[in-house]
Image (tube, rainbow, N blue to C red; front, side, top):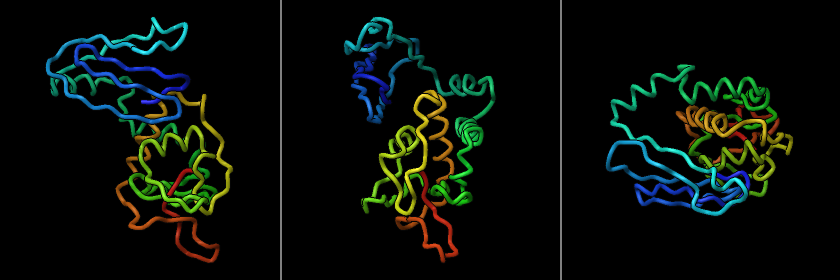
Length: 197
């Protein structure tokens, strides 16, 4: 969960669950519903003129019903596949080839869940928050050995597309590097195995 503007508070009254959602932060929430049905959700933090319109519904299904619903998506694409298509349509592969092609940005293969060395010599974990921030605010954490050349995609991708891009990056994590990696020296024959700035 993330907010693009001010503090919101996601509230599920039927499940007695509420969590604040903050700008420039990536948070997760987990709970187990105890019954199926359609339940109201709303923002429990006054957030501006449209606060009263911030409502919605959560639908709880049995696993088999959920699988039937999930298989009926219009595009018939998994989030990772849709993310790959978005990645290609935005031209990301020209800098972030999965295996290091492009050379202007770190590679994606094995990124998710690995440690990434930044140009400040700090090491960060490549989790959902890191990938999300790297897409929306790429100058915040620049990978060691790479320049600050990646543009921000804030406002160019919506929340669903952003989740699809994150799912695609996660899908490339089948081969994780064992140690933090940076861009190799110019005379090295190996390719970098971390990505995003």
